[in-house]
Image 1 (tube, one colour):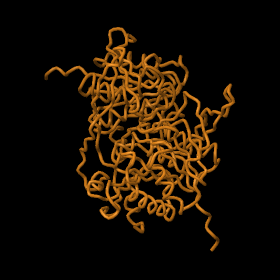
Image 2: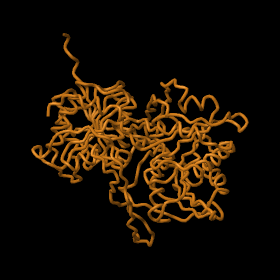
Image 3: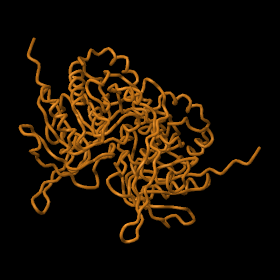
Image 4: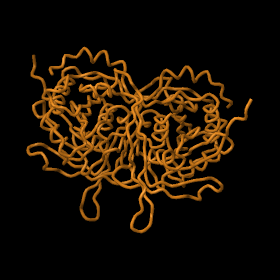
Length: 259
Length: 259
């Protein structure tokens, strides 16, 4: 058997290159292959699948991870993926991992998440991609269990491959390795943000708002990522970028539109 | 039969409140109901499902559309929807329409599009929602045919309703009303951006990049939005926010992960 080529792993996130979560992810991936880090130079949480088209992008070498090639990018997580593939390596990595995010990206949060949008961009580019998120927003969150599972799941993807166009949305409960009961393959739970706006006045009398909100779960299904996480399982949702509601195509063909 | 309540229609976009496309959409919706416009105060193309959490949001009354209640928002299209629902009307509108975008949001562009993300946010909030896009980037694009079809499709949604959680991604070819052959209900085509970065030096010697690219269609299916548009049909893709690759859940349950 010929020797297998060492995997080449692209790492990004949305909490910025100096976040604790990406440090934990770099350490977790070291035994699995060669690493390139391209991450935002500032927090980019909630940026979804945004790309930067009205401003130029800056890319700077970083010494954040001794012995590992790393860059900061002035743009979004999706910009980081595009710059890595089309400008830095001019090739596809073996694997793309994003995170470990400080905070949940379960359920509909997948849409708002920069961490997951980087993984979805990887899927569009036919790269096996995984987004990891820990259910703890704290800057000093404990990533030990999350990093443990990140390595296992990344190795699983390297061993089994992923269908082109699919990435994984992995969320890890805020719990110790001992408390976590295992892994569950889930569907994306249904939920929404019951938003509220904190209205204030600036020192000059102008009104402004802070977006706040409470996450409202409407989906009681025990096959959801929300259920798995509440029950101390790591949730894995196979995620794709085809947003077609296929089951409605035939229904809509029955509409009588007066053109 | 009791008199039907007049529909209340929320209008937004991503090209900003002063774009030609939103003017055309406001005119097209006038005969259908009462209108509220909440749109970005500057172009927000490519913002995807981004929300503003690191900066405060500003909301200002606008006189852009005489006789119609309108506001500009300093944030993204999704911020506009959230502010409209949770701060301005404190209720759900009968219908949410977004656009008419200057440029295509067919195929995978749905992910990058602020126009479509506003409609997807509407779907998350259980509001019947539609994003409209014309395949013409020009600031002075001719929106006549697009506005004609926007009115027909909006009326169709008011008459037939939409399943909760589903919105429509409507794209209109760059063609006259006479040239357009009709409507097709489609699935989202598969395509990706073959990106390239235009590398430049600023006056101070610093390097920067502009993101550019060519749209590469890999999907030859005649049931796609891409095929419909190339053949001068208006494409309608029923779109939902469940990104689960359901068909892979059983496959992944066969993986032997070494926890």
